[in-house]
Image (cartoon, rainbow, N blue to C red; front, top):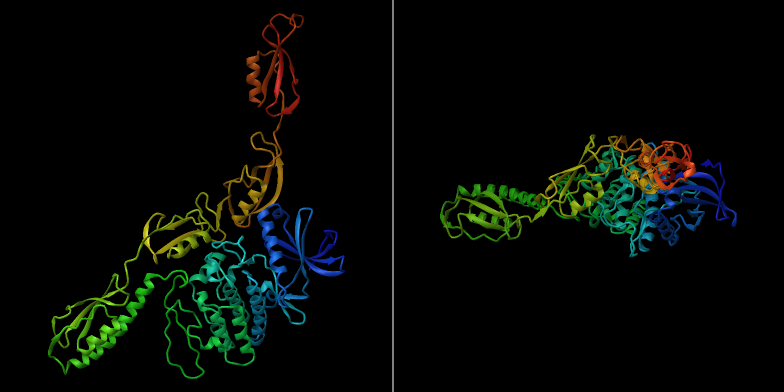
Length: 630
C-alpha cells in the first residue's frame, strides 16, 4: 500500500490513509472510520466520472447490489455516499492478498488447494445468483484470500441485478475481462449465472496449469477464442492434474451454457466431492469435456487411460444458431459410414446371389433404414448426392433406379439424400464504423460465422475496436452459416486522432477513451468562434496519427479574444467600417460634430473622434462610435 499525501476526510467520517489499487472506474484506499474507530476500504469514483450521471448510477448500483449480499465469502459493503461531488463506497478491509498475487509468474496451486478455493468462490456466486445478481467479472484479481485462508469475492463493479427492470448492462454490451469472458459474454449476448460458472472454470484452469486456456495479442483475439477456439485439456500442460478435476474444469468450460454446470452450487458440490475423494458427476456426464457443440471421436480405452476428445468442427456455439454446414457434415458422416458398411456386406453377398428382383421403395426413409433395406436385397449403394429438400434432413428423396424397377442382385443404386430445406436468404448488415462487440452480436444473431482480421493500417476515421471493413459488404444477400470477415486495427497500430472540437470536455474525454486515448491536461485559450467552456483544439491536433495509450491535451475556450481598437480618425465612416470589420469590430453610432469642431479645412465628411479610442483593448465584436464633420 502507498501512503497518501493528502489524508482527506470524506463525509466527516472516513479518513484515507493509503492507496490500495486503481480500477476501471474508481480508486480503492485504506481509510479509518473515525466514528467506529476501525479500518475500512474506501472505493472512490474518479472525479472526471462523477459528473456523468451514467457512471454515478452504475457506481450506485454496485453499492446497492453488494450491500444486499451477506455471505462469508463475499466482501460486505458498509456504506455509500458522496462528498463535495465525489462518490464513494465503504467496504470491509480484507487482511490478505488477491489470488492474482498468489499465482503471479505462472505459479500453480496443488489440485486440492485449487479445488478448495474454487469451491468457496462457487459458494459465494451461488448465493449471489439466488439473489438475482450476476458478478460478470470473476477473475483472480477479484478473489481475495485472507491471512487465515478464507476466500472472499469482491468488486461487483459491473454486476447486474437480473431481476431488475432497468438494466444498465443490456444484452449486446461487452463488460468484464477478456481473459475470463464466457463465450456468450464475449458475443455481447445476455448472460446469467452460468457465465460466472465459465469464468470460474477459467480461474480454476489457471490455478492448475499456471496460465489461462486462451492467450492472445489483444482482448479482441482472446474474446474470439472464447467463442470459436478449442480449449486444450489441463493435462496437456501438467501431468499432475487429476482426471476427475480435469473433468470438472472442462464441464465448467463448455461453450454452450446448457452443457455446463447449470448453477454455481452444482459446481461447488462436484468440487467438494473431489476434495472428499468421492466420484465426481462431471466424469460420468456425456460431453463433459467440450459440450454438444463439437463432434469428437473416441476409442476404447483401458482402465487408467485418459480419454482425449478431438474437436473436428469450429464455428458458433450451439446456443446461438446451428450452422447448416454442421447439419450437412453430420449427414455426410452418417452416409459415408453406412455406405462403407453396406458396400462391404453387399460385395460379399454378390458371389452367391445374382437373381432378378424389384427395386424396393426407400424414399422417405432415413439413410440407415434405406441402407438396411437395400442391403437385405443384395443391392450396392453407389453415389450419394446431398440435395436441399423440404423432407427431413438425412432422409432419402430419390433413388436411381426408381422404386418398382427391375434390378439384379449386386446392382448399384444411387441415392439423393435431403440435407434439409434450402437456406433462407439473409441480408448481411453493414457493420462498418460500429463497435466490434456490437457488430459481432448483430451478425451472430443472424447466424453468420464471424472471423476477425487485424490490420496495422487505419483509414480516415478508423479507430481501435471499430469495424474498418467487412467481407461481404453490407446489403449483400447471403444465408445463415455463411462466413463474414470483419477487419479491425491491430494492437499498436496508428490511427487519426478523433476531432473533438466544440465538444464539452466530458464528451471529448469519453470519445478519446473509447479510442484507447487519455486526457493528460486541460488548458484554456480565447476564441471568437467557439463558445466558452467547449474544446477549442487538441494537442496533438485532430487528424494526427496516434496509437492507443497516447495522452491528449485539451484546450478549451475561455471566451472571445481581446482586440486593440484601430485609429480611424481622418477616415470616412465607410473607410472606418471596413477597417474595424477587419479587426472583428463594428462601426457603432455615427454622430455629426459641432460646426465649431470642424474649422480645419478639408475635414468635411471625416471622423474627428472615436470611442473607444485608438489602442484601447475591447472584446471581439464590440462597437466603436465615431463623430464626423458635416
